[in-house]
Image 1: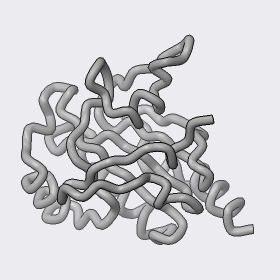
Image 2: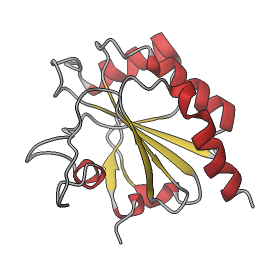
Image 3: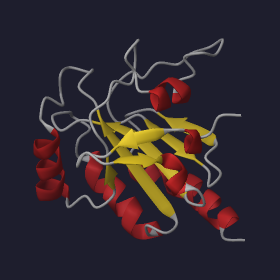
Image 4: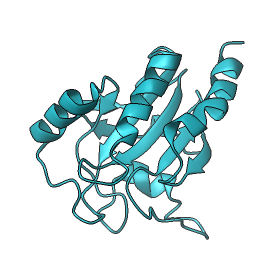
Length: 162
């Protein structure tokens, strides 16, 4: 069975990381954009991260320019924007495609491209909740605000703490 831990990704600063490094933590994976109506959700994501702490919750943000060209910036510009506007301290990865033939392998898995019922990403700030074993638990569409994930995250964090 495929899990989050089977993938690798490149951070905004250029270093590659095995996503198995997140084993043992609840993980929220989000496709983001700096010029989107949902961009203020960065604040809510940071609040979730602060609430649970880095040792219990990892947030992996993947900037994407596929929806309305709302993430046109370079890696440096994205990092500066996220720090200056939202004091983001969770993990920011390199810009990726989340749909189509050039989609990052992680996103191909999250959206079930190879399955009988693929579910492509519709817009920026689609969120995927994964348990500490890297298994996909739930998908949240862009309009779902980060605070609405609090209970679902708490359930996984509490199970992992046992």
